[in-house]
Image (cartoon, rainbow, N blue to C red; front, side, top):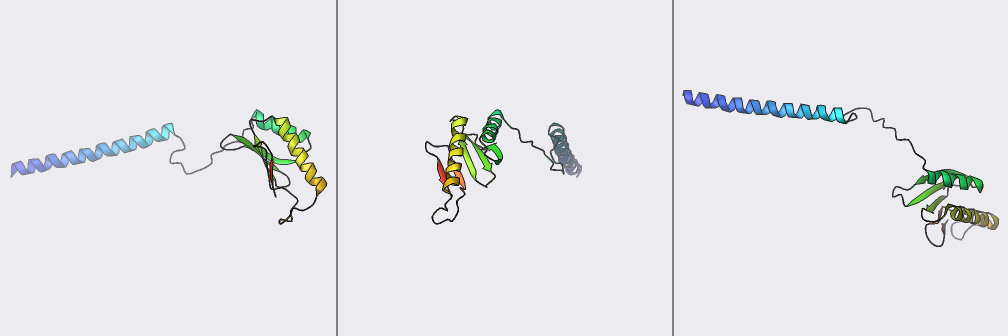
Length: 144
């Protein structure tokens, strides 16, 4: 009887101490995570990520302004392979990173002035405003 009671006490002590060690590990891990990652398990989701304008974006914006092309914003695509400009007339323009800035902006100016001079609605759409202009390829692509 004594032996059985001693065995139960040992196993109870073992499992109790195991649970305590696991709880200490969990709490210390959470504390370490909170120290090294301050936003870990925080309630406020106010992470501010300012939009940084690189030299390439500023260069494109400057050239667009010089050519009297009004735009809302210019930003780099997530892949970083090209730039995207949103024009005031709700057109989207894709610029290549591999081609000269001046050439692409002059081409955009020419496309927009030709469309303004022609001024005729396109077949099937009734729209004279381009929705997409793409300069990433050898020949520009214009979609209405």
